[in-house]
Image (cartoon, rainbow, N blue to C red; front, side):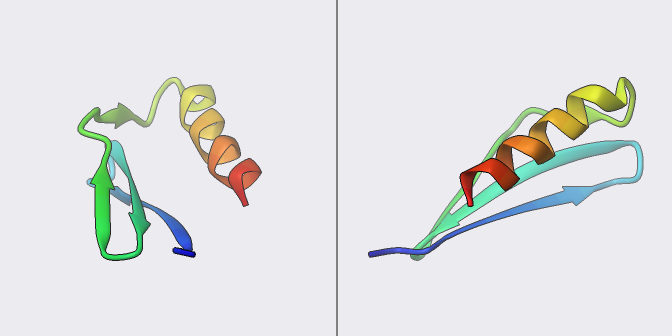
Length: 51
């Protein structure tokens, strides 16, 4: 069974989210701007709920 690892990267003005499953990396190609902050917090909450 592969362990899922979620991550995020930022350019300070935009965020991008990633998922590592085994040796496969999935990158969300959407850039999420810092504002509105509720959208970013929603993405983070979704990741935490998956654990």
